[in-house]
Length: 237
Figure 1 (spheres, rainbow, N blue to C red):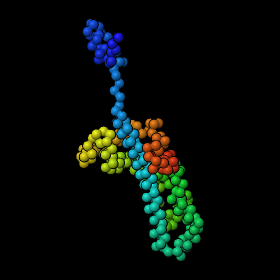
Figure 2 (figure 1 turned 90 degrees about the vertical axis):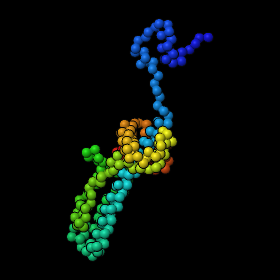
Figure 3 (figure 1 turned 60 degrees about the vertical axis):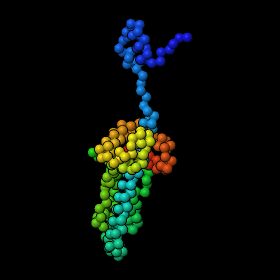
Figure 4 (figure 1 turned 30 degrees about the horizontal axis):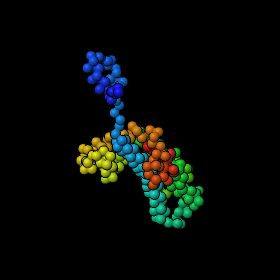
């Protein structure tokens, strides 16, 4: 029965015993490729899912908070000036109550599925842009209220910090990598973890693997969000 050589090291030893040499390029070609640890690969996938979900929700929250704040300004202003003065102002500025209703809808941007169309990039940062109609601008001046044209969205690093501030992140890190949960309390380790996570996101998040179906399979709770805001996520990721 012929003996089979199991690896390159055995082949190298055999050749030396019989006074043979081999081209140096063989070592590179025959060297066994070290496969990535499965746990490490799974943890990478989990972190990408964490980032995608947190990034989407935080950006949407920033927009919703601004809309609610602007609407509150309108309500307080109208309460202060009273109904009679309000109607006079409308007449003076050639506006109607119907116009104001449309303006408020414009500010609240009810078409949520198309919000990605209003996301712009400036200096590496993301913003949600309001494109106000002439009547909205007129109402703004009439009431003396500032309607923000640009809503600054959270930066990617802010999203990363938000994720790793949660105990859940460090528990997962322990389960898949065996690293202590207590690392969370070390400022130095915490900072390095954030930097490494950010670098990993920038390197891998655009891979075709991380598509809508992948994220839905990871968390059914986010199914509705992904269906409605997938294009929004692709814009802010």
